[in-house]
Length: 191
Image 1 (cartoon, rainbow, N blue to C red):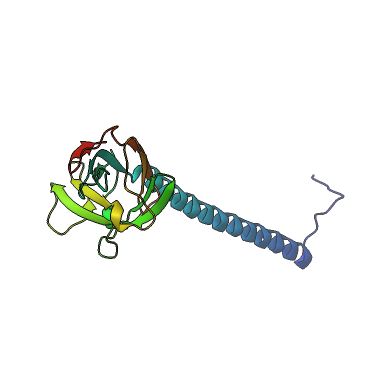
Image 2: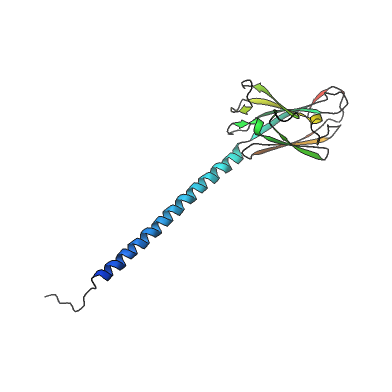
């Protein structure tokens, strides 16, 4: 009733070719899955680092300049520092500060144990001895003693100063200020 003049090829050769094709497909699938996993891990790490760089920022608010030596120049700066909105905790002793006055600049390490040009004072909502800002209401005063830095000069009348605070994760804050036109001996000024 059913006659066929053609026959399908059967045998060990066909079986070997079929197994080889399945093996090649399995190896290719394994390579694709492995590559996708590596790319996902790298993308996640890059995303976390980028988020930290953008969001882990400290804000430099008011800066008060003092003439502590009564010589008509501002030689001490007191900058109030707090966390930016949405920032993770930041250790201020690990923050680096770039300060530029009168055409000379210096990078000041935030660790006040190794550097006499900087001091950290807990001001609001912080335990004694800590230098970590962890909450939005935390406030610390970072004091820069321009006389203690060999690269920086005290501020004279109408001089400008630039402060850049760079958090350990890479986020930075830029603030440029100007000294008053008239500095009286021993006074303090909001810059």
